[in-house]
Length: 544
Image (cartoon, rainbow, N blue to C red; front, side, top):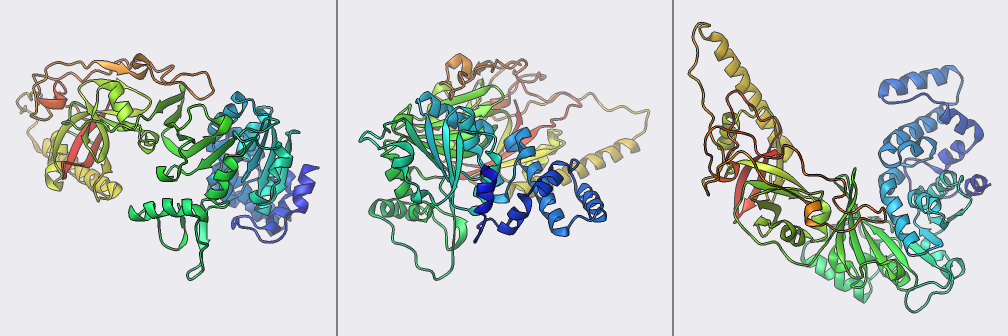
């Protein structure tokens, strides 16, 4: 019945260019759904051609073939977010791109259940990812989306859940008092209802069109952003003008101060736009910073806090910002690249203080220390050398180190990392070919003098030895997880063999004891092109 209701509403204009209302009406029929579910796995363009040819021979209408093949492609793309659930979903291209990943949606649902929420209005539900997680947590859901095709597909995707209703409407048109109960002055609802909002973050503003004047509070935030170059020109773009969200952030925050509310926004949200009483979490899933979640009223657990929440194979990990910047110090043996959520949450100072680290420059988000630290909040690299960023000198040093392949990362440098890595890798390959040719030309009876290991590194201070002490976030006591019962760092043990590679002789600087033995190559080598004290540097390192 839910499918029939939403199918009937598929009419009028649609903001999803990948699936039109006519496509949706074609797809939401028993014939089309049976055809879609009966397709063989489609993993390549050859599969598409083979299946398309077969269906044409069987007399299937070309329009129906195009619609089901589009859905097959979108289901394949959606696997990374929905896993096996994607095989029974109807999708749009925008819906897949903007949908919450299931582990993150489950964390949203866990927050609601911990607060005792029994009903939620999911405003801007998209294709239904968060609503699915809420329903699975036994929360009654009103899923609302303004786009007719998206609402229809959400209805199909959520049909197995009897505790879900789907409505095509603008968020501002929903009578929240009727759906959730009358709000209280403290931002709670009488019958434990809550709001979850995912405002549209892209606008298409034709050149010359008149823009609505922002409210006073929005204008102050916008002025601050404009001073820092935080907005872009007209056209279809990512925007942080508060009044160009749909619904506007002013409306969102008014709702958030009447009912317990969660708001999902893009991770680039400027801190200036976040209300002081909101709890803000920058969420990272396996290294991808996917959103910032704002929590209000009864849904706040750390009122006013700014934190990074990371998800990996070991569970959930949290670090809370203390508004401190890390101390600046010289480059040491280990260089650390913090997760993007830590940087966005401005928790770099808290992370540095936890592990006795410093930053290499007050404007650059790399940390450094004398000991190896195992942490879900950052990746460690052993420094092999540090030199001025000069293309010729860096290439020569890479060849001396026996590097076979290099990856380039940058912060604070105006370069194209992919293009530079491609250039260096091509030249390293040529250099190896030249060396092989020279070896073949030598007299087989001759032998070269024994090579001795050459210490690598900086002439900053002497460090002798072949091992490095390892510190883990579990040892240092990281924060609690997000509703999964897994503390930060749980399941993360000290890495066996994390010590430095054995070398011959005494090295100087960060790479002491990491001399390259004869015939050894460094296969996982990274060049960090960055800025230190106003000058560009190339830091050569390898993964810990």
